Image (cartoon, rainbow, N blue to C red; front, top):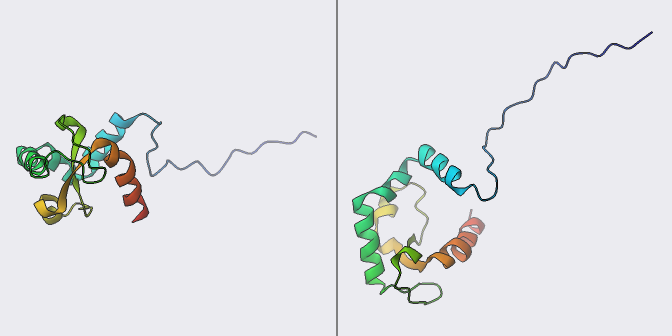
Length: 116
């Protein structure tokens, strides 16, 4: 007598969080732009003007490593307190500091992950 296999009655669930392959930053960024309304603020002329005023105010000097960076694409107007979508914190110039991209993408991100 042969055993009969049964069809599975439970199907797999689709993942709730989308996983991205390492290095697939453009796809991740596009997804975040679509799901987080406040990310559009970074693409406004108002933000570009505020960002440049922060870089000039801080003399193009990183607030973390004190490096002077003349190439503005290598500088970030960083929120000292994460705004998490709060317009008040996002646009407040006293909550912004100039830091280099290297510090922002490493040390600052590590600090923010620890504060969650």
